[in-house]
Image 1 (tube, helix red, strand yellow):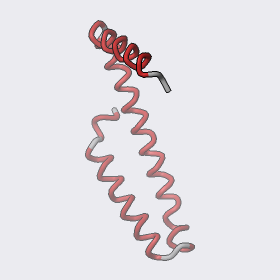
Image 2 (tube, rainbow, N blue to C red; image 1 turned 45 degrees about the horizontal axis):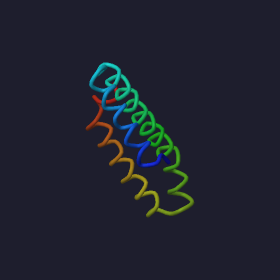
Image 3 (spheres, rainbow, N blue to C red; image 1 turned 45 degrees about the vertical axis):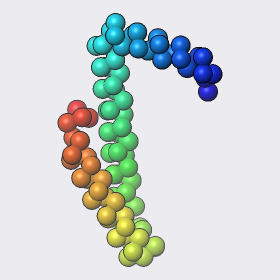
Length: 85
């Protein structure tokens, strides 16, 4: 954790860099979005792989919940698909 003074200085430096080199910050933002997309894809793979095991070992309700989460995950990925490319 930064002290309040250090955080204020950091914010000031960040603001100056953003104003002086917007292309640099655009590249950083693109990398962060791509990273979130990879995590969401990994979550999707793990959920699909665990769905049959959850349905067998935890019951139909757990399998149904996992399936609903997968549908929501797919909807989110479809909605924001342009942001990760």
